[in-house]
Amino acid sequence: MTIAVPPSTLATPNGTTRPQVRIVIVGHVDHGKSTLVGRLLHETGSLPEGKLDMLKAVSARRGMPFEWSFLLDALQTERDQGITIDTTQISFRTRSRDVVLIDAPGHAEFLRNMITGASQADGAVLIIDALEGVRDQTRRHGYLLQLLGIKQVAVVVNKMDRVDFSAARFTDISDEITAHLTSLGVTPTAVIPISARDGDGVAERTTNIAWYDGPTVVEALDTLTPSQPLDQLALRLPVQAIYKFDDRRIVAGRIESGRLQAGDDIVIMPAGKIARIKTVESWPVTPVSGPQGAGRSVGITLDRELFIERGDVIGHVGAAPRDTRRLRARIFWLHDQPLTAGATLLVRLGTRETRATVVAIEKAVDPGDLESVEAKAIARNHVGEIDLSLAQPVAADHADEFPRTGRLVVEVGGRIAGGGLVLSVDSGQRAATADIVPVESALRPDERAARFRHGGAVLWFTGLPGSGKSTLAKALERRLFDRGGSPILLDGDTLRAGLNSDLGFSPQDRSENIRRLAEIAAHLAANGHIAIVAAVSPALDDRAAARRIAGDRFREIHVATPAEVCERRDPKGHYAKARAGGLQNFTGIGNDYQPPTASELVIDTSAQTVAEAADKVEAMLAASGVLFDELVDLAANI
Image 1: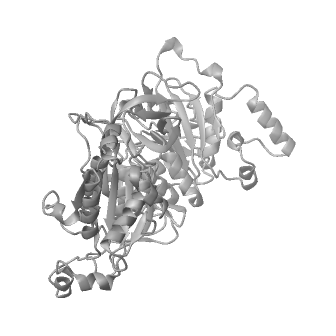
Image 2 (image 1 turned 180 degrees about the vertical axis):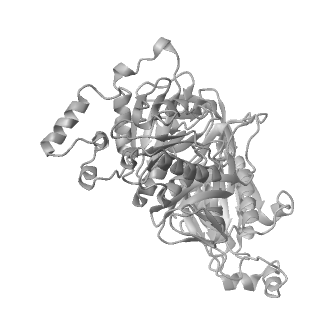
Image 3 (image 1 turned 30 degrees about the vertical axis):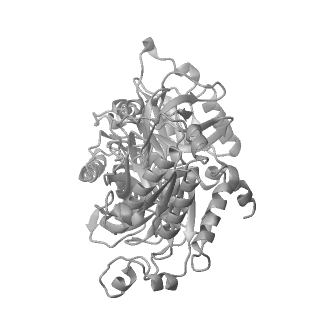
């Protein structure tokens, strides 16, 4: 729900630019958040004409006294239950600020919504009932604000009329909440005694609080400053979708920070691919000219064909996010079951979703009492720092540098189970620097295709050691060369003896080995060659990453020779060495090979000759349009 300031109040005096601050208002249920918001709208002259009289009339017809909170009761459910269940955004103006106030629910069941509201804010108003004082939920809200990186917090002690505007009671609460927030690294900008119902302390100091000499709520809002304008940060454009119109391939998304325009050199992360923006598309008028800034949803076309997918993040060359498969995050856990090390989660960073494993848990805290414990689990409504190992690379930022792209959400069983901040990102390999300027080939793809009689492709042979991958790959390389083509063999072991000699056989090193293979193969394919990769590549996620890198030129061929046949062949003696304990992390003994589930071709070299298997590969290439001319008849027979 959004309540906007009427147009008559939006005129800017003397034409100056006014800062806008986004402020979340949080507190325990029934502490008076909605009442305060309604009162603020009234005191700042932000209600549409006649709105207040209309609501009073509605209350009279219902036979109930008027409440300021009725201004926010947009949902019938809220009227029925008497509680706020969703976040509400209200725009109004103070003397020197344009304020967007986000009213978030305060009771434990709706902490998910509170996190959603607070994640958008520059500052916060934390409201406390003067009679009830600081409660566990109040402490939890304070911790959540710190968790989400909100450093500006104005505290409002409401319902002072219920304690006879006692200065002593106010001082006790002020001291307690100030100590609590200070322990979190947050110094309150003000602690203000008010009666939201009657207006004391909201916009003016009344005789009831004559002993108080600090700012009113409106004055305190005027001191809060907006975070650095998103337009002034580096470009971050998370990719939401890719559309094809006529001959254009449009990459669409919302600019979360920075600016872009046609002609900009960009890098697409986490793959690190570099391109130049050809046009910026919009609707209904397209293309558009001039810089497009944060908050704008745009489509862009590029000067070259690249495989891009939802979840990629676009930045400028030299100022891109990092690519990583390891994150450290501080999260607030909401799930009924405690979070433990080894758990598998779905992690959302911007538009990217990936599976992740919790490697370690540290600094588990109950925000109710802030007692750090050496816990092996994070209980519901508790906070902890966790190390995550991601199933695939992602583009990520530190939350303190990029608030919009440095926040994550975790899911369990299709439901939000927690959220928080990215604290650190393991360095990736593809953060491009400003002096990288890709040089395109002097030859067009159609020129190469005319000479070689084929298009570019990546043929990825995967299977157990000894399955026949390299033998088949070499036979296919000879065939394609003999017919005038340009095949290039990339054998996994051969590259490990040179380019990839720095890598071991840990899961991380194996993933990097496959990434390098895929990058080389994709580059060759983009230049019209047929890259023939023979690599065990045991992990489904790694092969999926290779497919993403190569795009629609990728063809996976599963050499599905039975394991017992592979071990009986043992052409390199690896099985025997592994059985004797002399070869660690050897794929083939055990269940560490993950066979493809949807490869383009499956071949069993124990059931057919090498020539027959090569025939099948050639036929598949002809049927998919990679090979031209005389192989068309062969393709028709598969």
